[in-house]
Length: 258
Ligand code: NAP
Image (tube, protein in one colour):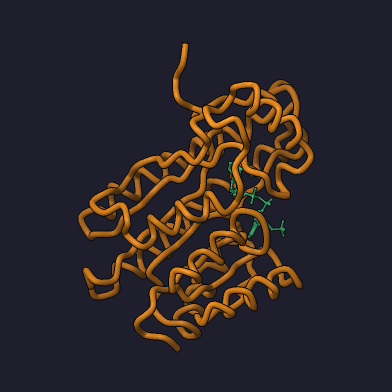
């Protein structure tokens, strides 16, 4: 067990943005608890890739929306790696079916809200309680980084329940930033724009075209590694004296224009 390295929990780490964040934090000297919904070869592969950077890692499968699993998971991290310094709430789900808000099912609304907002809130809460129980050490930056979305701000009519859940997650980030600021714990809301991952695989060609046509200031879509490098910068306090802010990783998509 390491005592000096920072220790991060990254949820939804077996693929996409979460995988890239876990690997980038490992390159930055973090020990990692890599979470995903279930145990899989992909998760084990990520853990092996993390360890190849000379840091410790454990696979920590649990459903983030099962609130009863949070304390068990955090205790496993403390026992296996040591006291947590960093939470990256990345796990998220899209809508069950894209379509008219008039047709959104209760099941899809509940799923978005439960995973993208409720689980994120209570994992922030559980981790914050543990961080507050630690002795404060200014040499050991502590942070909670929530991966929300440009859709926390920008409407996507065919994915209204996703937008609603991400807007809730954005406000949760601000609430925890306000609560934890006096304790020296930073909380950020990282809002990816159009990023090429398994989640966007079915629509990525259309996104590439829209980015090229001017939707984004950079006429291309982002990579998971772009988001990961921003998260690592935040987790290592390379944006000192900041908290509570939205960091848009969207190629300038949401810059107002006329
Ligand atoms: P992704 O490829 O679908 O990966 C999401 C990961 O989260 C998967 O490994 C998934 O596990 C895991 N997950 C889902 N529900 C979970 C649960 N209840 N408990 C634990 N893990 C769970 O998505 P992504 O594109 O990398 O997105 C990552 C985050 O960025 C999400 O919060 C997403 O909303 C946000 N985001 C993405 C984009 C984009 O353009 N890609 C843009 C804005 C925001 P399974 O494989 O088992 O399902």
